[in-house]
Length: 351
Image 1 (cartoon, rainbow, N blue to C red):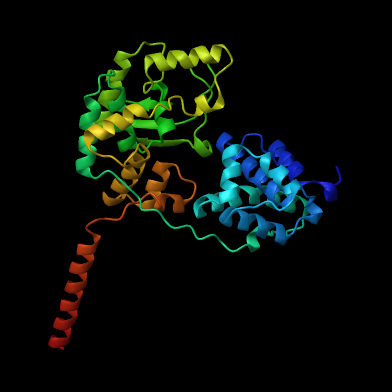
Image 2 (image 1 turned 135 degrees about the vertical axis):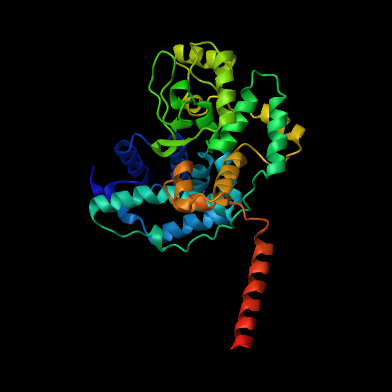
């Protein structure tokens, strides 16, 4: 294959073959971004690729895309329905920025290989993404949620999930993948680590292939020990129901266990929604338990770098996005400011 005649689609294929271990979700999103680019600009060769095409794709993401030729309409219709509708209407800034990030990396990889170092994507104006307000469970709401979870008659499954996610900062998928071998009950720690394909576990790797150790509080330890007694010795997954685990193992024996199932074994969110409504915490979801953990760590005096390690973030900027503002910060700033002025006035008077 001559480098000058390599197309955008072929570039993606070369990138995939060089990085076969990409996260499934990342791969899917990157393929979607490339498909959108081809719909807007065509499957051009890399020697014909220019800044104008980057600008056209960025404009389509933000302002929508209206085909003007039969060829453009044909390319647009080849997109999945949801992606096609989104490209026609335009995406929110945060989604558009994500697509640009996904499509940029293969081009940069190619440019480094060819020693061209002409990154047109970096020349685009940055998309300003409004920062969302971080939502967390305050102490009262977290107490209500835990109380409601404990009332669910499911062998302590819901209570254990809520407690572990709120006090260890685990992602939902990480909590569901928690096995007995990951827990040191004596030391009070949980190790988030990959699982091998064995007779009782399916192969799984944490996000970003992260391996980290997080705290296991006494209350969570007691609940997990109770779960261990509740389940059969053949089931290592403590935060999956016996029926769900048996179903997944049956699917694996038939060769039908999908990557999505391996990544997140139980996507049934309805039980948590009922618990949330019972607790009066509508508007807050399972992911907010993770931001609650990060916020509480910072407020309890744990330094930012340590919180980053506990959360498993490769970039500290991601950790900073998990913190909710302190409701008492305004009053603290007012009191500190007034006290400082009083000291200045006293010092001036004394002088």
